[in-house]
Image (tube, rainbow, N blue to C red; front, side):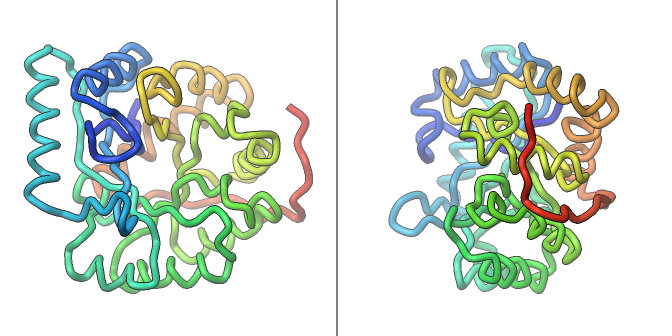
Length: 255
């Protein structure tokens, strides 16, 4: 499997606290069948986790790579960011302050949970205008999507992709988020599923449970597409096929 969203870079944000914890996270990922993982520290959170492209950030990534080799952990890690969307996101992309997953044209972007859908749409347009492809991090956690999952269909029609969190699907962020992400899955509006791991104990990068869950309830072909095929296309900078249909209403699922 390929995990496109994990806060494994030590000391960079609210994820791993230390190199030792990062190595524990790597062991968990490998144990569950993940062989490629993208390190995505929070970025562009001014005054909190800025993490713009820098020699310091690159050095932290290289230190983790070397530690994995030293411990003989065969987890391939790639550089990336979870980029917080702001009014000047296009300018920061153009200035090279933020980067895509594995240095591709796919940019993992997140939004304030209470952002209005029109504002999210404008920021997505900004990213597209900059020549990049937005991969929307955990859309199911945004309040407007919980109210009306159809917004995600509209963003995909613009040219965006979506990444759902394993914890959302398994109900670990509450019933509303779980209902929303199941509606997105049922309507073909999720392109990949990732751990959004933050530690070796809570919100871990172990992906075994979600692979089995997706296979059982949505089919193993779908599980393979969301956990391997589409993520591989993204890190290779290849086009990802978008499909799906618009939900008629928010509704509720009963899982």
